[in-house]
Length: 141
Image 1 (cartoon, rainbow, N blue to C red):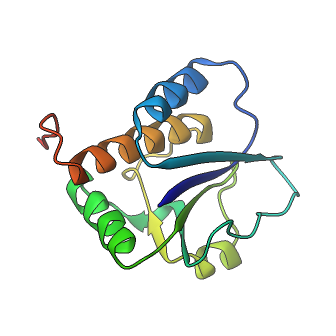
Image 2: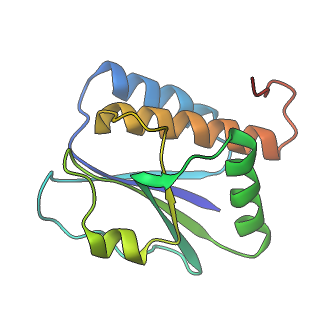
């Protein structure tokens, strides 16, 4: 399954970009990042079908890493070919983006900078794919 992060804002050369790259290199599944301007620009249609869309949103579910992995594993096993992860700009997502998403996920109740959220998502995608591969590292505290 292709893991596709669609993020508002250009990450450029930054510590957050280094973290994203570090985890991207570890992920064994297909991986893609599409950057959009902070405002405007169209969210691209899925590259592969069937697909799922996950919006990273403060109103979303707070999942453990194991729960997140289980969802991705179930989608993969059900034949989903692409999962798109939407990261909004500083103002978040509009109602239509939230309403059309298959799942809303939050990284806790705190507000996170969208560039840091991208790095956190990359880490959780690496962790989820590691859990699904039976990697011995994972543990939840």
